[in-house]
Image 1 (cartoon, helix red, strand yellow):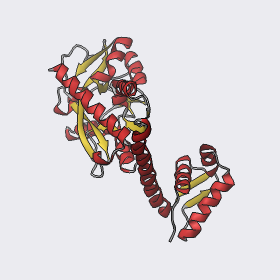
Image 2 (image 1 turned 45 degrees about the vertical axis):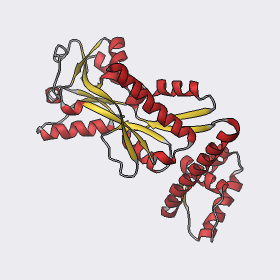
Image 3 (image 1 turned 135 degrees about the vertical axis):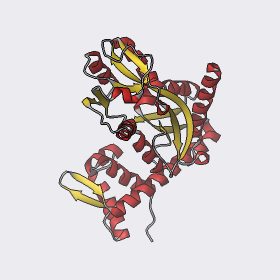
Image 4 (image 1 turned 90 degrees about the horizontal axis):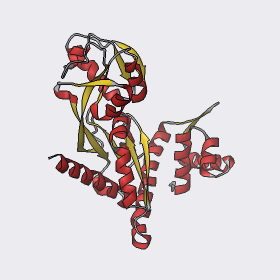
Length: 304
């Protein structure tokens, strides 16, 4: 029976993530020929191909996808083991991998990471921006330890804990017809051209569904990938955008825009923290998880 070794598994994960044996060999500091031989040895032992070779790289086969999923879990378990044992000799060390959506990154995640790192000098945090659906999948697949995303998406394979909330508003130019309203229903925006934000995939789906329920369609003048780009187009009065009030406050000041709160029930949305299993988090990841919950509790107490 084939006995997996950590080095071969790490190399296989690197190849799948890089899409190339050559790039994986550079990443792992090993000769490409040696990397290729390890994969060939695994394929021979398992009597099945793990990679589909192409002219410009490789992709995992169906068997390779299964190995990749298990390899990530096994490598994560090794990291957790090392981090847990390090606490006894040198204090808590470790790496916490975090996936977060753009709204949470703009609103609060960097501040929380900075505060955490100040109190935990031996722990590192790697932050990567993803859309909410990718975050849930990434946590389920073991790509990261902790995810922060919207509650729009389901996640039967992960644990989701309610976190802080924010509020959507309509960002408009001061000369726009809707700028003087004290609040708006989302339906009120459907007569006007909108600026779409591609990273708000979950919100876009929700708005499309709401519009369809009212027998209407969204009319996009442009689609962009950043809050800054959206606000710049709004400044030019090319359309309006539905964006989180907390995320665009500084942009409204910078670009002299108006943000009119949405009155719809769905306009107050909750972030959730995603983990595979709270009880199986590494010591370092559990510390960051607890830090997030503690900081949110203090914020709520201060608001009260």
